[in-house]
Length: 105
Ligand SMILES: [Zn+2]
Image 1: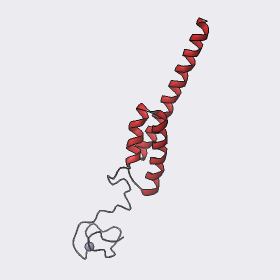
Image 2 (image 1 turned 90 degrees about the horizontal axis):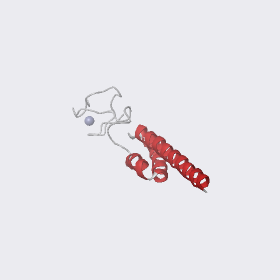
Image 3 (image 1 turned 120 degrees about the vertical axis):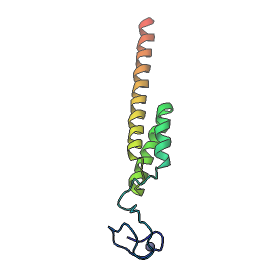
Image 4 (image 1 turned 30 degrees about the vertical axis):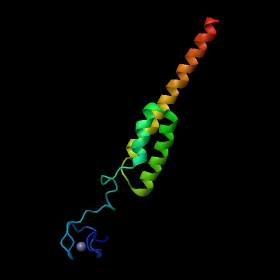
């Protein structure tokens, strides 16, 4: 890998750069190094309110997480599940309402 401070090639296991002495944090080996995927967060939040928008954002967010090595993949997955459950509940609720209306006729 390369030192982020001086740009020189250093050992992958190096903790401190031998060229400039700056502490090295190996982002390449630890993908979830704090940077969260914004779309995964948006998707997760939306999944509680607007299921379909939450589902779309979460799916795209999860793909971006895996591609860019960003954090939030688990959050995106949670968003997908919550969106799916939310939509299922609405469909069941709608079904119950329709059955109820038909039964009342
Ligand atoms: Zn360096």
